Length: 456
Ligand code: ATP
Ligand code: MG
Image 1 (cartoon, rainbow, N blue to C red):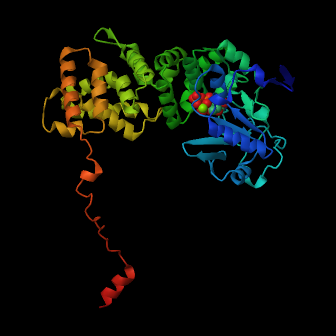
Image 2 (tube, helix red, strand yellow):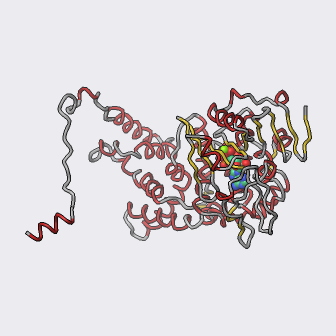
Image 3 (cartoon, rainbow, N blue to C red):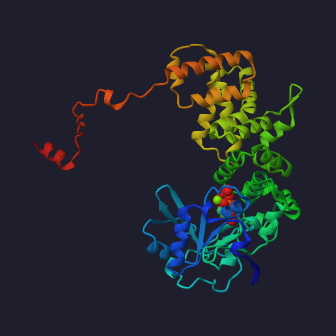
């Protein structure tokens, strides 16, 4: 039976298909503890959406009217984290469950005292919300009611709650209808919501691609209109979010939507211009093709490291830059280094690829010539490189259809199988049975002793 209460719809336990068997036992433990201590406890966000769609949730988020201080007292295995907004991490053996106190929507308007759950600890109350001149949320730290907490979320399908008190689903935003219709729709005015947090545009694309949903018309129009403003988000956050899109298993679809909306051109302007032009009469089609390969590899359960992903996507662009350097007389290895440095210089002000990943990307591309030298000098140390598999995988994915490359890869893989250093069982190692080696004591510098020695 569906009950309408204020502006929420409650879907009773027998009316929805969510079973507790599909939930994380730890999340359930945390919810029962909250309930048994007299607090409200909801499962919220992506996990409710995924459970309703019959997908396995990535993580389980809990919200409650207990304050962080109260959570700390209630759970021995609790750590409070976050400077912007205090959250509780409940640590279980193999999982951390995030528990947040209901929050309200941000606004710069002078506000009445926020409605707070009974027992709010005012000493712990974080600073109020703050927006910049363009309406982007800088701080969003006000406790609120369950409804306010749902309304501040990004999309209707991400705002459903599962109430542990009676196992019902609470829908404040029409999320259930959108879920059934396969629609991604912002909560409230999409232009305002994208202005508050431009990263929501990337999230819209990711959810549309991952769930095979369509972006609702007003949301789509606002997204296309605001695509250029994506660059206002923090570069490190854009990097994390880009990885989530491209490693979602639906990267090719994400890429298609990024191009259609104008987000790709805003995030990677140089690469976007290059993709639109031809090289020696040929269009650049490798980017999309590589993403399809990455998707099928991920769907088969393989892992793709961020440096390998970036090498596969941007390798052709970097190779062309390197070729330009070589035409100016720069030697091969330096030409790759210079090309990667130029690529990083163009990209990082908008999408902050970490230095470590940049170096690893450079090595994957730079080491490709080593594969052609068989056996070359010290093949065993090449095989022992931690990025050996990425170097091989890059070669296989980009030119694995060439006969001589297949032969080369076959040779290296056979060597790797033979030469992989098999760790000796412990009982056969020299140390086994022998008395434990004493650690050499380093003499401590003791200034007073030095002074004494000086005096002698
Ligand atoms: P995933 O399957 O990727 O984990 P998710 O929807 O759970 O998807 P999270 O990043 O885990 O995404 O966020 C959890 C929830 O927090 C979301 O479902 C949404 O309700 C809310 N949320 C996350 N990011 C934002 C944002 N930028 N603006 C508003 N709400 C957000
Ligand atoms: Mg999640």
